[in-house]
Amino acid sequence: MSAQTLLNSLFRYKASVDDELLDALNALGAEARSDDFRSALRVLNHAHLVDRIFVANLQRLNHYYAASWSSEAPPLAQLSSDIRETDRWYIDYTSRITPPEMEEVIDFTFTDGGRGRMSREEMLAHVVTHAGYHRGEVGRLLPEIESTAMRDVFTGYLHRTDPHAPSMRVEQRVDAGRSCF
Image 1 (cartoon, rainbow, N blue to C red):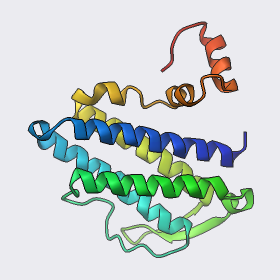
Image 2 (image 1 turned 120 degrees about the horizontal axis):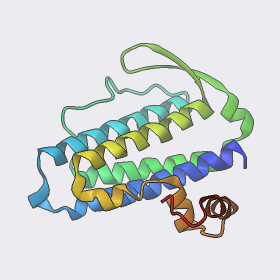
Image 3 (image 1 turned 60 degrees about the horizontal axis):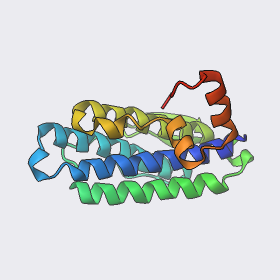
Image 4 (image 1 turned 180 degrees about the horizontal axis):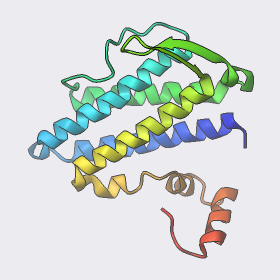
């Protein structure tokens, strides 16, 4: 599997679990929207802002974010729409990026004014891992969405989307029937 194929699969996975998490948050209803719920939205908004900052970096564009955190998050409906739009951008981008483009190193500026330098491949890996960390944080803030958070594993995604994929056959043989997802 090429790095480009893997990254595209990881971004498809990210979009899938983002959808599940956003739907679970929406299903909580207004009565469950506590301080922890608002904190969870701020965490998701932070992850989304970082996603958007790296969209600009990958395109060698200036971003106009002064920080990667905001004291207030947008309403869930707006944040959901924005996250889903950005996820589609990353899926499209990783479906067409070439190996030489992935190796290209880009200079950029962090929100604090510090200078950064990463390859596109490193940036994409950062976005995927950063988002996963913060989805887990949301799961800790809102244990009532545990059933959704527990599905946030790459092997589970691969099994749901292609249970006959070679990677799943290897996992099933190695685990001798124990479920990893």
